[in-house]
Amino acid sequence: MDSKGRALDNRMIEGLWRTVKYDDIYVKAYETMDELYGGLDKFFCKYNTRKHQTLGMSPEQKYREIDQLLISCAGTEMIRLVRSIPGFGAKTTPAILAFIPPERLQHGSKKQITRKLQALFGTDPRVKESGKWKGTTKISKRGVGIARTTLFQTAFCGMTHDPQLRQCYVSLKARGKNHKQATIDLMRKQLARLVSVLVNQKTFTPITSQL
Image 1 (cartoon, rainbow, N blue to C red):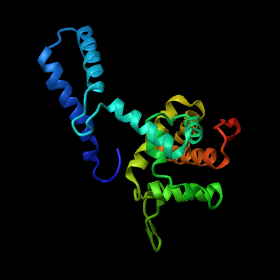
Image 2: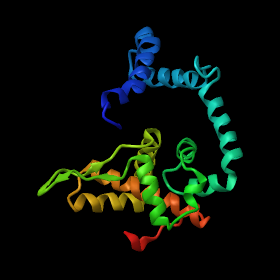
Image 3: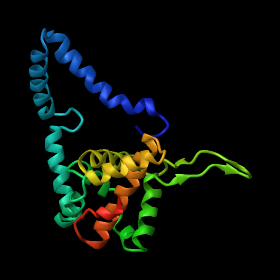
Image 4: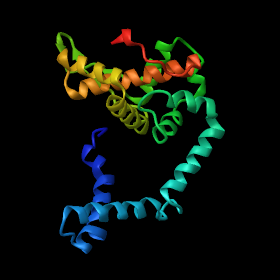
């Protein structure tokens, strides 16, 4: 979840499960788990291919439209580079590239560019202190919320599928960081990986020595 209105972050998934319950589960009253699994599988196949009222097309058709738009704007090579990073997939790549102005990648070192993007996405640290008093350091949560949420998704997916990122998470936890702090560090690591492949114009290659 993201931003101060955390209760609002659940509205999409709550709406989905309301539809599932009232349009399928309560109507069909499944008696066994096998019936439930089979029924939900059919329901979601139909749900994912239905015509969306707002979009005027199915979500899958909209995703294909976004892919074509991304290719025309960013080019197939940039897409290939980004998707070489574990955690960046068909849905997260367009969402993250849409908020990275090309000129941001042309000025400064990779570390400087990464810091600027951290500020743009609101993952930069916000230090609270006054005189001798020092508060808890948190991320600023300024900038583009959608990109920040997408970056979280890439970190979570990367941690699941990338052994290097998973080991990094374990090491951060062992050093005393909680789950949220460790995940934010992985978000910054994913952003640094993204900047590296885009600036170097080379696909991502894990470096074991960094663990």
